[in-house]
Length: 278
Image (cartoon, rainbow, N blue to C red):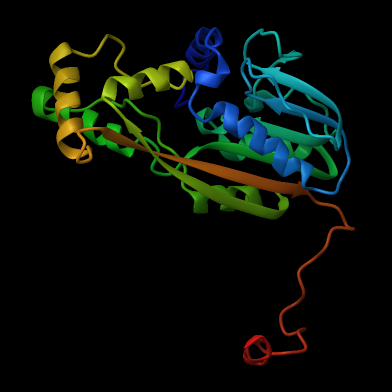
């Protein structure tokens, strides 16, 4: 197991006391994920969410019943659970929503398969999660400082799946009509300390099982900050950090879903279609 789930529970619960409006991305994306659902014509009778922490969930009008699951007891959670072990019988839900959660599961393929099995035919799965080059600058600075001072490195930041891998995993888990896209953000900070604060407030600090168990040495942290300011700052002296947020969407197979045309069944070739548009 890559991640320590008990530590994830502790870090998330600790961050629960912080207002969601102050947490980077969370308030904005909680509205966007349900806005995307609202644009779908389907009516979802019974849905379940995972990972919304203490955020008030802005349910869209095409969802009738929405149950909330999280890994710790909170005001918004109806069920204490995680996607890694779903307490849901098969073919029972119309909708499953995962919010900044899957990047910390230990078995993404197995988790996606469980989600697929829990959905009814033509049920929808939608998720947003950190992916790709998220925190690449911080990763570089931490590794450089440790290598320079200690002669070796310890894992500080979880590996994030890239978009192509996530798209392939949706297909492997038997989702139909899979869609995967990514939002890229470069957030500017006055100093690296504010970046560290944002990561803590989101409950997204290091939960790797192979992490260094004691506190990082003061000289390593100081050198990390120096490298960050040297390598990843703009002309105003402010530093920046990359965040990439992947969107995943897939449907449980249903025989009435639209299907792609078979190769060679088109009535016009590509050249003819382009000429008509010219």
